[in-house]
Image (cartoon, rainbow, N blue to C red; front, top):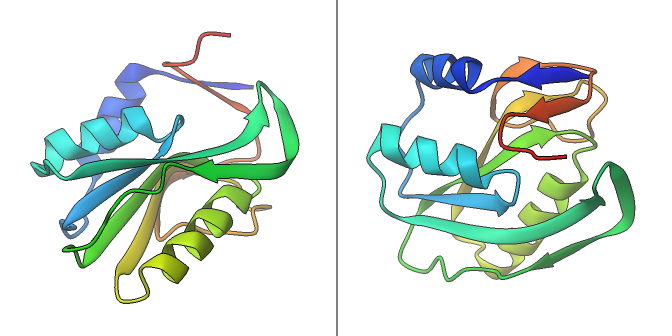
Length: 140
């Protein structure tokens, strides 16, 4: 297991160099803290969330529950934010639903961590790892 500290998180955010999207879409819960900080750094007030539940604590669920799909009409470029692309299933399922609902929008993805065994590689990420990550905002 690897601990990911607030200090490391702040250092990662300082390295961020991507084009500003029209809006951020956090995958709750893992992407919420990251999206909030991205919004502050990029001066974006259009921050939305979508719920995708794929784990029960550390146990992966058989089916991902996705709900709370936001209204993204009026935007063009959306950055989808999550803490990690572990199996990749969450990003895959969220993108599938969003592309069906909003075929004219451009979606990009970002995560703090990416596992090389993942079925989905985010457009942007900070760290590649094979370890279980304990994020500073987690309390278990």
